[in-house]
Length: 244
Image (cartoon, rainbow, N blue to C red):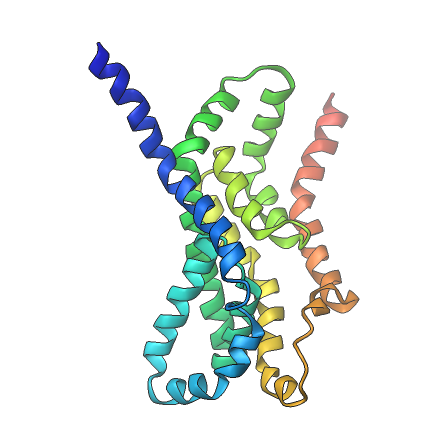
């Protein structure tokens, strides 16, 4: 009996270990890497990177993907810098593809880490809940794709939250993967396009303006897509009221 009681806590701790590792690395990285994963570092090494790209393109792509995945998976500072760097090194279309691939893989890593531990237990409690919580949980699962698209498309939602929250409420992984890969494309295009002209910005002694994402002609269409994603939820709600 004692062996069983000792094994259970150890097993529970093991399930939480991936998420705990991510949180610890994220905190350490926040205080230690902010000055390294920056545009200053990119500017100081721009010629070296461009020369290496021209002679070892495939190797640089793999290195870029690996670094970006680590940044996203461990929620390290520098995700925006990485996205802009993708455009600077590889151009708009290739850079966007690489950015989306890396960000999606990193997001999936957080999803699995969270679902393996805390998410598994919390999702089970939500499924067994009653009353208002049960209604909200049922509504979420009936509209998973719409809700997940909204999380991805609304810029005010931090990327880490959009990765972690779905795992904690038990959404299907295939829906998470689909909405992540497609939902981050608009933002990726914006940041990658900033990177395309980064060389000229550096030559002027300036820093890239990441506030471009909030310009009306950019944020307007993105919010329009978010509204379109919310349309099925609104339609179901209105239909339910009319039938009631």
